[in-house]
Image 1 (spheres, rainbow, N blue to C red):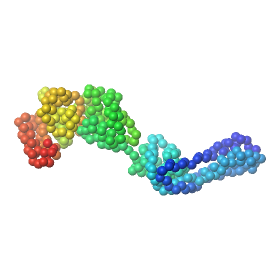
Image 2: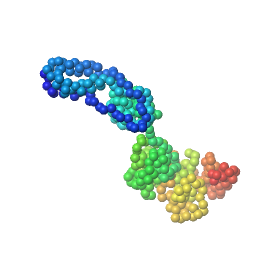
Image 3: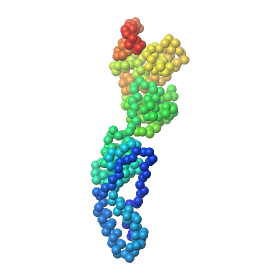
Image 4: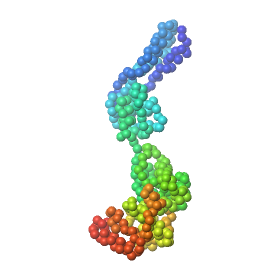
Length: 395
Protein backbone atom coordinates (compact mmCIF):
# COMPACT_ATOMS: atom_id res chain seq x y z
CA UNK A 1 0.00 0.00 0.00
CA UNK A 2 1.22 3.49 -0.84
CA UNK A 3 2.09 5.65 2.14
CA UNK A 4 0.64 9.05 2.97
CA UNK A 5 3.42 10.98 1.25
CA UNK A 6 2.68 9.22 -2.06
CA UNK A 7 -0.96 10.34 -1.95
CA UNK A 8 -0.03 13.83 -0.80
CA UNK A 9 2.38 14.29 -3.70
CA UNK A 10 -0.48 13.57 -6.10
CA UNK A 11 -3.37 15.33 -4.45
CA UNK A 12 -1.41 18.44 -3.56
CA UNK A 13 -1.19 19.16 -7.29
CA UNK A 14 -4.97 19.16 -7.65
CA UNK A 15 -6.87 22.49 -7.67
CA UNK A 16 -8.30 23.56 -4.37
CA UNK A 17 -11.91 24.50 -4.05
CA UNK A 18 -12.60 28.22 -4.12
CA UNK A 19 -15.95 29.56 -2.94
CA UNK A 20 -17.93 31.37 -5.64
CA UNK A 21 -17.94 35.18 -5.45
CA UNK A 22 -21.14 36.88 -4.40
CA UNK A 23 -22.53 39.72 -6.44
CA UNK A 24 -22.81 43.07 -4.67
CA UNK A 25 -26.32 44.10 -3.67
CA UNK A 26 -27.88 46.49 -6.17
CA UNK A 27 -25.17 46.02 -8.82
CA UNK A 28 -26.00 45.20 -12.39
CA UNK A 29 -26.20 41.48 -13.01
CA UNK A 30 -23.24 40.25 -15.09
CA UNK A 31 -23.60 38.04 -18.13
CA UNK A 32 -24.84 34.50 -17.74
CA UNK A 33 -22.18 32.08 -16.56
CA UNK A 34 -21.43 29.16 -18.80
CA UNK A 35 -18.95 26.36 -18.29
CA UNK A 36 -16.74 24.80 -20.87
CA UNK A 37 -14.12 22.09 -20.99
CA UNK A 38 -10.71 23.69 -21.40
CA UNK A 39 -8.79 22.59 -24.48
CA UNK A 40 -5.65 21.82 -22.55
CA UNK A 41 -4.14 19.53 -19.96
CA UNK A 42 -5.81 16.32 -21.16
CA UNK A 43 -2.62 14.29 -21.10
CA UNK A 44 -1.63 15.47 -17.64
CA UNK A 45 -5.04 14.77 -16.17
CA UNK A 46 -5.24 11.30 -17.79
CA UNK A 47 -1.89 10.32 -16.30
CA UNK A 48 -2.96 11.55 -12.88
CA UNK A 49 -6.28 9.69 -13.08
CA UNK A 50 -4.56 6.43 -14.04
CA UNK A 51 -2.07 6.87 -11.23
CA UNK A 52 -4.88 7.42 -8.71
CA UNK A 53 -6.82 4.35 -9.88
CA UNK A 54 -3.71 2.16 -9.69
CA UNK A 55 -3.05 3.33 -6.17
CA UNK A 56 -6.65 2.71 -5.15
CA UNK A 57 -6.87 -0.79 -6.63
CA UNK A 58 -3.43 -1.77 -5.49
CA UNK A 59 -4.03 -0.86 -1.90
CA UNK A 60 -6.18 -2.27 0.76
CA UNK A 61 -7.26 1.10 2.07
CA UNK A 62 -9.86 2.22 -0.44
CA UNK A 63 -12.12 3.68 2.24
CA UNK A 64 -9.20 5.40 3.89
CA UNK A 65 -8.25 7.02 0.60
CA UNK A 66 -11.83 8.16 0.04
CA UNK A 67 -12.12 9.58 3.55
CA UNK A 68 -8.85 11.43 3.21
CA UNK A 69 -9.02 12.60 -0.42
CA UNK A 70 -12.54 12.03 -1.70
CA UNK A 71 -13.60 15.65 -1.72
CA UNK A 72 -10.36 16.68 -3.38
CA UNK A 73 -10.95 14.08 -6.05
CA UNK A 74 -14.46 15.40 -6.70
CA UNK A 75 -13.09 18.93 -6.96
CA UNK A 76 -10.42 17.70 -9.33
CA UNK A 77 -12.90 16.30 -11.82
CA UNK A 78 -15.15 19.34 -11.37
CA UNK A 79 -12.20 21.55 -12.35
CA UNK A 80 -12.53 20.21 -15.87
CA UNK A 81 -15.32 22.78 -16.30
CA UNK A 82 -14.20 26.42 -16.68
CA UNK A 83 -16.52 29.19 -15.49
CA UNK A 84 -16.93 31.85 -18.15
CA UNK A 85 -19.39 34.70 -18.62
CA UNK A 86 -21.18 35.17 -21.92
CA UNK A 87 -21.16 38.47 -23.79
CA UNK A 88 -19.46 41.81 -23.48
CA UNK A 89 -20.40 42.59 -19.89
CA UNK A 90 -22.46 45.28 -18.20
CA UNK A 91 -22.19 48.07 -15.63
CA UNK A 92 -20.57 48.79 -13.27
CA UNK A 93 -17.24 49.40 -14.95
CA UNK A 94 -13.94 48.40 -13.36
CA UNK A 95 -10.52 49.99 -13.84
CA UNK A 96 -7.88 47.35 -14.42
CA UNK A 97 -4.22 48.36 -14.09
CA UNK A 98 -1.73 46.50 -16.26
CA UNK A 99 1.56 47.33 -14.62
CA UNK A 100 4.90 47.21 -16.46
CA UNK A 101 6.20 43.65 -16.20
CA UNK A 102 2.80 42.04 -15.63
CA UNK A 103 2.64 38.63 -17.28
CA UNK A 104 -0.50 37.04 -18.72
CA UNK A 105 -1.11 35.02 -15.56
CA UNK A 106 -1.08 38.22 -13.49
CA UNK A 107 -3.54 39.95 -15.80
CA UNK A 108 -5.87 36.94 -15.86
CA UNK A 109 -5.90 36.87 -12.08
CA UNK A 110 -6.66 40.59 -11.79
CA UNK A 111 -9.60 40.26 -14.18
CA UNK A 112 -11.08 37.40 -12.16
CA UNK A 113 -10.49 39.04 -8.78
CA UNK A 114 -12.21 42.27 -9.90
CA UNK A 115 -15.23 40.43 -11.30
CA UNK A 116 -14.56 41.31 -14.91
CA UNK A 117 -14.36 37.61 -15.79
CA UNK A 118 -15.95 34.59 -14.13
CA UNK A 119 -12.67 32.83 -13.47
CA UNK A 120 -8.92 33.00 -13.86
CA UNK A 121 -9.02 30.12 -16.35
CA UNK A 122 -11.51 31.94 -18.62
CA UNK A 123 -8.64 34.19 -19.71
CA UNK A 124 -5.55 32.17 -18.89
CA UNK A 125 -6.56 29.18 -21.01
CA UNK A 126 -6.91 31.49 -24.01
CA UNK A 127 -3.49 33.00 -23.35
CA UNK A 128 -1.94 29.54 -23.28
CA UNK A 129 -3.49 28.79 -26.65
CA UNK A 130 -2.16 31.99 -28.24
CA UNK A 131 1.28 33.11 -27.09
CA UNK A 132 1.14 36.19 -29.33
CA UNK A 133 -1.43 37.93 -27.09
CA UNK A 134 0.21 40.81 -25.24
CA UNK A 135 -1.02 43.73 -23.13
CA UNK A 136 0.35 47.26 -22.99
CA UNK A 137 0.88 48.74 -19.51
CA UNK A 138 -1.79 51.22 -18.49
CA UNK A 139 -5.19 51.60 -16.85
CA UNK A 140 -8.16 50.19 -18.74
CA UNK A 141 -11.87 50.65 -18.03
CA UNK A 142 -13.75 47.37 -18.52
CA UNK A 143 -17.24 46.15 -17.73
CA UNK A 144 -18.12 43.40 -15.27
CA UNK A 145 -19.32 39.99 -16.41
CA UNK A 146 -17.27 39.80 -19.60
CA UNK A 147 -16.34 36.59 -21.38
CA UNK A 148 -12.65 35.78 -21.47
CA UNK A 149 -12.50 36.57 -25.18
CA UNK A 150 -14.19 39.94 -24.75
CA UNK A 151 -12.02 40.86 -21.77
CA UNK A 152 -8.85 40.18 -23.78
CA UNK A 153 -10.15 42.23 -26.71
CA UNK A 154 -11.12 45.09 -24.40
CA UNK A 155 -7.63 45.19 -22.87
CA UNK A 156 -6.12 45.42 -26.35
CA UNK A 157 -8.43 48.28 -27.41
CA UNK A 158 -6.70 51.69 -26.91
CA UNK A 159 -10.09 53.39 -26.63
CA UNK A 160 -10.60 51.65 -23.27
CA UNK A 161 -7.42 53.12 -21.81
CA UNK A 162 -8.01 55.67 -19.05
CA UNK A 163 -5.52 58.55 -18.94
CA UNK A 164 -5.16 62.05 -17.59
CA UNK A 165 -4.53 64.45 -20.47
CA UNK A 166 -4.14 68.21 -20.51
CA UNK A 167 -2.58 71.00 -22.56
CA UNK A 168 -0.51 73.79 -21.04
CA UNK A 169 -0.45 76.59 -23.65
CA UNK A 170 2.67 78.67 -24.22
CA UNK A 171 2.39 81.95 -22.36
CA UNK A 172 0.36 80.57 -19.47
CA UNK A 173 1.56 81.62 -16.05
CA UNK A 174 2.36 78.98 -13.46
CA UNK A 175 -0.87 79.82 -11.66
CA UNK A 176 -2.88 79.24 -14.81
CA UNK A 177 -1.02 75.99 -15.50
CA UNK A 178 -1.67 74.62 -12.02
CA UNK A 179 -5.36 75.51 -12.33
CA UNK A 180 -5.55 73.64 -15.65
CA UNK A 181 -3.83 70.59 -14.14
CA UNK A 182 -6.13 70.68 -11.11
CA UNK A 183 -9.19 70.68 -13.36
CA UNK A 184 -8.06 67.97 -15.78
CA UNK A 185 -6.31 65.69 -13.29
CA UNK A 186 -8.91 66.11 -10.52
CA UNK A 187 -6.21 67.15 -8.06
CA UNK A 188 -6.80 69.71 -5.30
CA UNK A 189 -5.31 73.08 -6.21
CA UNK A 190 -3.71 73.31 -2.78
CA UNK A 191 -1.81 70.06 -3.44
CA UNK A 192 -0.39 71.45 -6.67
CA UNK A 193 0.52 74.78 -5.06
CA UNK A 194 2.29 72.88 -2.29
CA UNK A 195 4.09 70.68 -4.83
CA UNK A 196 5.36 73.76 -6.70
CA UNK A 197 6.32 75.74 -3.59
CA UNK A 198 9.89 74.43 -3.23
CA UNK A 199 11.90 74.88 -6.47
CA UNK A 200 14.99 73.34 -4.84
CA UNK A 201 13.19 69.98 -4.62
CA UNK A 202 13.36 69.87 -8.41
CA UNK A 203 16.94 71.08 -8.68
CA UNK A 204 15.94 74.67 -9.48
CA UNK A 205 17.73 77.66 -7.94
CA UNK A 206 15.10 80.35 -8.47
CA UNK A 207 15.84 83.87 -7.13
CA UNK A 208 12.10 84.55 -6.98
CA UNK A 209 11.46 81.40 -4.93
CA UNK A 210 8.90 80.04 -7.42
CA UNK A 211 8.80 77.69 -10.39
CA UNK A 212 7.37 80.42 -12.62
CA UNK A 213 8.83 79.87 -16.08
CA UNK A 214 10.17 76.39 -15.27
CA UNK A 215 7.12 74.32 -16.26
CA UNK A 216 7.36 73.49 -19.94
CA UNK A 217 4.14 74.23 -21.87
CA UNK A 218 3.04 71.21 -23.91
CA UNK A 219 0.47 68.41 -24.13
CA UNK A 220 0.82 65.85 -21.34
CA UNK A 221 -0.62 62.44 -20.55
CA UNK A 222 -0.43 60.70 -17.17
CA UNK A 223 -1.84 57.58 -15.59
CA UNK A 224 -4.79 58.02 -13.20
CA UNK A 225 -3.66 58.51 -9.62
CA UNK A 226 -0.43 60.33 -10.49
CA UNK A 227 0.55 62.54 -7.56
CA UNK A 228 0.84 66.33 -7.81
CA UNK A 229 4.59 66.41 -7.17
CA UNK A 230 5.20 63.78 -9.87
CA UNK A 231 3.32 65.88 -12.42
CA UNK A 232 5.17 69.07 -11.45
CA UNK A 233 8.49 67.22 -11.56
CA UNK A 234 7.77 65.92 -15.06
CA UNK A 235 6.98 69.40 -16.39
CA UNK A 236 10.13 70.81 -14.79
CA UNK A 237 12.25 68.00 -16.27
CA UNK A 238 10.79 68.77 -19.69
CA UNK A 239 11.91 72.40 -19.36
CA UNK A 240 15.36 71.32 -18.19
CA UNK A 241 15.74 69.05 -21.21
CA UNK A 242 14.79 71.91 -23.57
CA UNK A 243 17.32 74.25 -21.96
CA UNK A 244 20.08 71.64 -22.12
CA UNK A 245 19.26 70.83 -25.75
CA UNK A 246 19.55 74.56 -26.52
CA UNK A 247 22.99 74.62 -24.91
CA UNK A 248 22.00 76.84 -21.98
CA UNK A 249 24.33 76.52 -18.99
CA UNK A 250 22.53 75.87 -15.72
CA UNK A 251 23.71 79.16 -14.23
CA UNK A 252 22.01 80.98 -17.13
CA UNK A 253 18.65 79.20 -16.90
CA UNK A 254 16.97 81.94 -14.92
CA UNK A 255 18.05 84.89 -17.07
CA UNK A 256 17.24 83.06 -20.31
CA UNK A 257 13.80 82.02 -19.08
CA UNK A 258 13.15 85.55 -17.82
CA UNK A 259 13.79 86.98 -21.28
CA UNK A 260 11.98 84.09 -22.99
CA UNK A 261 8.93 84.49 -20.75
CA UNK A 262 8.79 88.19 -21.60
CA UNK A 263 9.10 87.54 -25.34
CA UNK A 264 6.43 84.83 -25.12
CA UNK A 265 3.90 87.31 -23.74
CA UNK A 266 4.73 90.16 -26.13
CA UNK A 267 5.12 88.41 -29.50
CA UNK A 268 2.37 86.83 -31.56
CA UNK A 269 3.89 85.67 -34.86
CA UNK A 270 6.89 83.33 -34.93
CA UNK A 271 9.10 85.70 -36.91
CA UNK A 272 8.32 88.52 -34.46
CA UNK A 273 9.63 86.57 -31.46
CA UNK A 274 13.19 87.20 -32.62
CA UNK A 275 12.53 90.90 -33.31
CA UNK A 276 10.89 91.44 -29.91
CA UNK A 277 13.90 89.84 -28.24
CA UNK A 278 16.19 92.20 -30.16
CA UNK A 279 14.18 95.24 -29.04
CA UNK A 280 14.56 94.26 -25.39
CA UNK A 281 18.29 93.52 -25.74
CA UNK A 282 18.83 96.83 -27.51
CA UNK A 283 17.11 98.64 -24.65
CA UNK A 284 19.13 96.76 -22.04
CA UNK A 285 22.33 97.73 -23.86
CA UNK A 286 21.58 101.46 -23.49
CA UNK A 287 19.98 101.27 -20.01
CA UNK A 288 16.54 102.07 -21.40
CA UNK A 289 13.49 100.85 -19.49
CA UNK A 290 11.85 97.85 -21.15
CA UNK A 291 8.38 99.38 -20.62
CA UNK A 292 6.50 96.13 -21.04
CA UNK A 293 2.84 96.20 -20.08
CA UNK A 294 2.98 92.40 -19.74
CA UNK A 295 5.29 92.65 -16.74
CA UNK A 296 2.84 94.95 -14.99
CA UNK A 297 -0.19 92.74 -15.64
CA UNK A 298 1.75 89.73 -14.38
CA UNK A 299 2.02 91.40 -10.97
CA UNK A 300 -1.59 92.60 -10.94
CA UNK A 301 -2.89 89.20 -12.08
CA UNK A 302 -4.75 90.68 -15.07
CA UNK A 303 -3.05 88.24 -17.41
CA UNK A 304 -5.32 88.80 -20.38
CA UNK A 305 -5.03 92.58 -20.34
CA UNK A 306 -3.34 94.31 -23.28
CA UNK A 307 -2.89 97.82 -21.96
CA UNK A 308 -2.23 99.34 -18.54
CA UNK A 309 -3.35 102.49 -16.74
CA UNK A 310 -1.23 105.48 -15.77
CA UNK A 311 -1.57 104.42 -12.15
CA UNK A 312 -0.28 100.93 -12.98
CA UNK A 313 2.72 102.32 -14.84
CA UNK A 314 3.49 104.77 -12.00
CA UNK A 315 3.37 102.06 -9.32
CA UNK A 316 6.94 101.80 -8.06
CA UNK A 317 5.86 99.20 -5.52
CA UNK A 318 5.44 96.66 -8.30
CA UNK A 319 8.80 94.83 -8.58
CA UNK A 320 7.82 93.75 -12.10
CA UNK A 321 7.08 97.31 -13.27
CA UNK A 322 9.54 97.71 -16.14
CA UNK A 323 8.39 101.30 -16.63
CA UNK A 324 9.89 102.22 -13.26
CA UNK A 325 12.70 99.65 -12.84
CA UNK A 326 15.58 99.24 -15.28
CA UNK A 327 16.64 95.84 -16.52
CA UNK A 328 14.82 92.55 -16.74
CA UNK A 329 12.03 91.74 -14.27
CA UNK A 330 13.03 89.60 -11.24
CA UNK A 331 12.00 86.40 -13.02
CA UNK A 332 9.90 84.88 -15.78
CA UNK A 333 6.37 86.23 -16.24
CA UNK A 334 5.11 83.23 -18.22
CA UNK A 335 5.93 79.69 -19.32
CA UNK A 336 7.91 80.04 -22.57
CA UNK A 337 7.98 77.49 -25.37
CA UNK A 338 10.79 76.42 -27.66
CA UNK A 339 10.48 79.39 -30.05
CA UNK A 340 10.61 81.95 -27.24
CA UNK A 341 13.66 80.24 -25.73
CA UNK A 342 15.37 80.19 -29.11
CA UNK A 343 14.54 83.86 -29.65
CA UNK A 344 16.02 84.77 -26.28
CA UNK A 345 19.22 83.01 -27.32
CA UNK A 346 19.26 84.12 -30.95
CA UNK A 347 17.59 87.51 -31.39
CA UNK A 348 17.23 88.88 -34.91
CA UNK A 349 19.72 91.54 -36.02
CA UNK A 350 18.23 95.04 -36.03
CA UNK A 351 18.31 98.50 -34.46
CA UNK A 352 14.68 98.60 -33.29
CA UNK A 353 13.83 100.13 -29.92
CA UNK A 354 10.04 100.11 -30.21
CA UNK A 355 7.23 97.86 -31.38
CA UNK A 356 3.45 97.98 -31.34
CA UNK A 357 0.77 95.58 -32.60
CA UNK A 358 -1.36 97.43 -35.14
CA UNK A 359 -3.90 94.59 -35.48
CA UNK A 360 -4.60 92.73 -32.28
CA UNK A 361 -6.54 89.98 -34.04
CA UNK A 362 -3.81 88.99 -36.49
CA UNK A 363 -0.87 90.06 -34.36
CA UNK A 364 0.59 92.27 -37.12
CA UNK A 365 3.33 94.31 -35.45
CA UNK A 366 5.41 97.31 -36.50
CA UNK A 367 9.01 97.61 -35.26
CA UNK A 368 10.63 101.05 -35.19
CA UNK A 369 14.16 102.31 -34.47
CA UNK A 370 13.03 105.83 -33.47
CA UNK A 371 10.35 107.24 -31.22
CA UNK A 372 8.92 109.41 -34.02
CA UNK A 373 8.38 106.35 -36.21
CA UNK A 374 6.89 104.51 -33.27
CA UNK A 375 4.29 107.28 -32.74
CA UNK A 376 3.15 106.85 -36.34
CA UNK A 377 2.70 103.15 -35.70
CA UNK A 378 0.78 103.87 -32.50
CA UNK A 379 -1.63 106.06 -34.47
CA UNK A 380 -2.22 103.15 -36.83
CA UNK A 381 -3.04 100.96 -33.81
CA UNK A 382 -5.46 103.53 -32.38
CA UNK A 383 -7.16 103.93 -35.76
CA UNK A 384 -7.63 100.17 -35.92
CA UNK A 385 -9.21 100.20 -32.46
CA UNK A 386 -11.72 102.85 -33.59
CA UNK A 387 -12.69 101.07 -36.82
CA UNK A 388 -15.36 98.89 -35.19
CA UNK A 389 -16.79 97.76 -31.90
CA UNK A 390 -15.30 94.34 -32.54
CA UNK A 391 -11.84 95.85 -32.87
CA UNK A 392 -12.44 98.06 -29.86
CA UNK A 393 -13.11 95.01 -27.71
CA UNK A 394 -9.48 93.97 -28.22
CA UNK A 395 -8.18 97.37 -27.17
